[in-house]
Image 1 (spheres, rainbow, N blue to C red):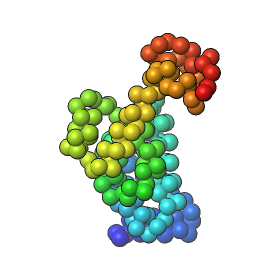
Image 2: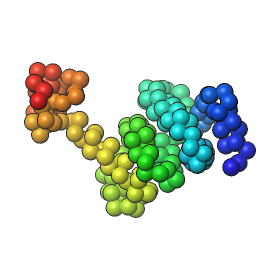
Image 3: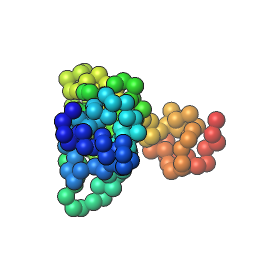
Image 4: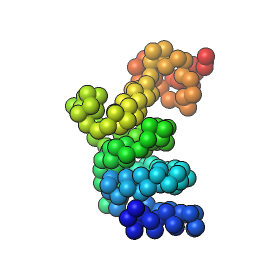
Length: 166
């Protein structure tokens, strides 16, 4: 464990706080995440992911300099060292990173064929992409608009709030 990671772990354990740095880089974020995982500090991992997702949401509309330059790179580096048991936790990062990044069919193909990232990265990103596709709906408005807050089906143009939930 390097001194910067040690200081963050001590601060978390004794003060109970963590704040993302001014600029978020994949390798730094991954080192802290790996150290927290090794020490079994799941609360710190959860706080890191929560702050990452919140920051990405707020940066969607920001016009000033962004603190997270490459969200997919951060996620890629974290999934290289993260255990598979962190699947659900990392899905929050994937959902926001996918929205914040330009996602092309070639990039999706590289992820699906294993040319880019670890198997965990591929699984998380492909599931996030499937969820995104499903939100465009149909297949009978994705099983009669289950858990959908409203809006319109982009395929059949029905008002989702009027469709009875099954």
